[in-house]
Length: 184
Image (tube, rainbow, N blue to C red; front, side):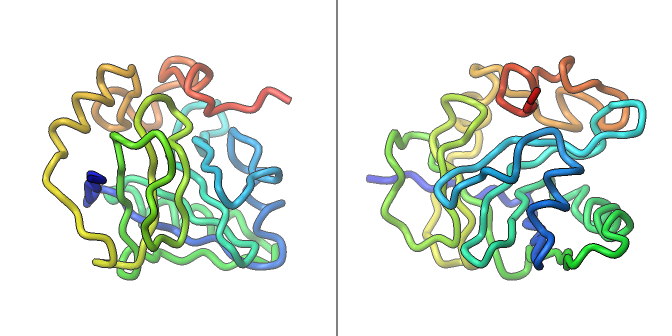
């Protein structure tokens, strides 16, 4: 049986439009340009000094746009910041948390057969799969404490808990070890 855990402390931000890929690729710590529909990338948006402002998972949406799975508490600030940076880019940035859920499948070694907008292996390590699905579309179970224990055991820090936003460099949060930085 597939264990699906609703991550109700996460939000979904949609970045869409003709320039969405180039826009995100030029702003975040990871390579978004080569992202495939069945992949997710861990990335961050940094301060001018190089400290983490926001961290998130980036999923490619089927329409050429992207979905960012980010902390709910920071979603309004992330949406605002991305809208400030867009300038003349042909991009729209919208908070889609009212339409989408972030879901974890921590015990899966293959993509579960569920109706999801995006699903991919968690790029940060042995945390199974992550999905973005229409609100309430996937039945979930209570297993958040076990998921948190697995996250901690895997050495995957949680922003705002294990490191401070605005005060931590990516290497201090193990982003280099968690595939969160593209050095090319």
